Length: 407
Image 1 (cartoon, helix red, strand yellow):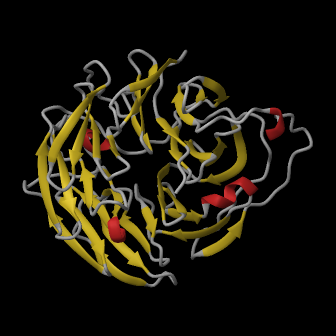
Image 2: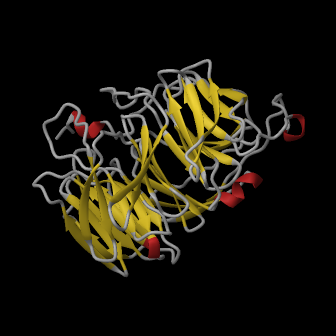
Image 3: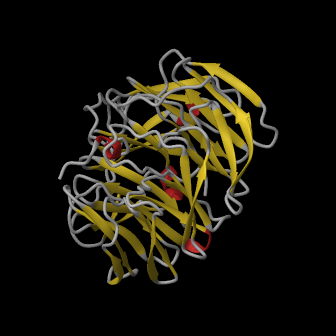
């Protein structure tokens, strides 16, 4: 069955094919089928005329901002545009898991961008419909929706250009997600292109040890303190902890939790909450807090709506939500109380199309970054004081905002 528009706003639709800039030719090649270990292969092309690292000043704490036609690389302190990479099509960005790189999702798969040196490297993970990028336990996991392929690597190896890659293929392609835990266990969603149903846990030898198919419309993940994993459903969440999967039901018949944000400093996961299955675009005012210790769920009314790009966690485990009222709402995950709000932007409204630009929230340490497509600006906020410490205006409209982020 076809997903409703309210759900498809968080799907990773295939972007238009990008125009690739000159780069080296080495690629990270992943094997299909059963679990395998591979190495990125290849050599530099003789006609490579790109600048070497020594020719380009490194960018401090880089931010990556996508726009229609490329990716800006900003200095994370001054917010000045230090460089840009031309790349056609609709592209997405995520931290790669180290302090140098970000993952760019293109029409052809995942590509690794050296954000410090503004260089789109030759490291590629090809495949149709690149989806979720998950960082946990010193590993980064890529899920390719069009093939169901899971690829796992240590991001600290990216600087060498030849990451060792473990691969696994899901039973069927679907819009899914996977997480590898510290002990090597793999948590993986279940589904097909038509229907998503639950999750499975595999041990380090990829033998199944737990399964639940009580999760219609499965979407998104978060890992909390103690490696408790939360997977979202249309009627609640699944929690995997200590070898057991538990269903936590929504308090309403339809209560979709499709986007989550977790941190290893808190046992409570922040989630969205949608109650209208027939809405063209629901603009919810409630968020969910899932306590992985007690397998309970509570709802908190923010008094404003938000989008799937509105969630983050602070350095002390605070739940942060960027509301359409233009404020960052700081939520105590234990009490469920909004402890303060930080004014950042004018009020705004979520666009109907999920790929359309809307304000983004990205947090790195005490620094909080917010994009504003309406004014083409990026703001840096000190989370401790709530003060806006830097503002920059871009030439093009910003879409996604991310950056480097070490484990």
